[in-house]
Image (cartoon, rainbow, N blue to C red; front, side):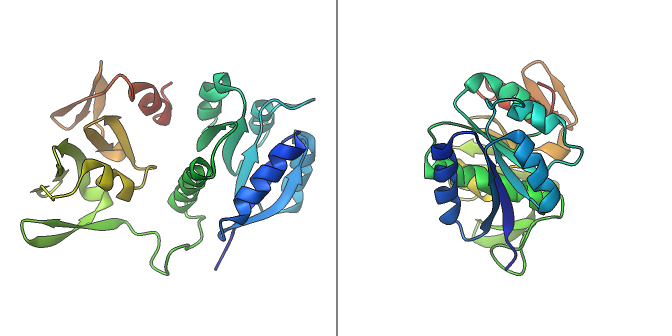
Length: 237
């Protein structure tokens, strides 16, 4: 099984040790280097194939944001920092996640899963679950039948009480599953939650207008708590 090669970059020894420990809990991760400065990290990137960098921001000489801007073909990056105020800059540089210290192992795993999704999307990811990964579909039970739904055919989904309404290019399905369960099954590099009751296929968006997103002629509200992250992930913020 291929590994996701990782580089840890942080000027604090304790922070590097915590990340090293967290990485050791995930068999898919292989730490190929641990650096105390961005300049050392630049050398490490020349010596190793690196898929993912855990990158601190507040470091001497060259901070993490400036360091990332110097890379022509950067790997996936998860920022690990004590400062919330750099989040917008981080996402403008296409970081796949932003962890504010101290963060839990659970939150770390969520961030790593996002990075692996991004690697799979660009065709550089290892097959981590089975030889058929990454799947581009899911199976949905609705009206006593089981349907295979291709990700690219799913336009959007809507919460309806304890059920969910899925709108595809061919049909509408109403499986007896919670909205949160469906969201957990969909790749977050393709599907964006825009409201507590709606998730949309990013590739199917036709236009935005005010606090609404349109998929063809269907108008979907953008919730105030979701708008900033939604626009950021569209690289509009």
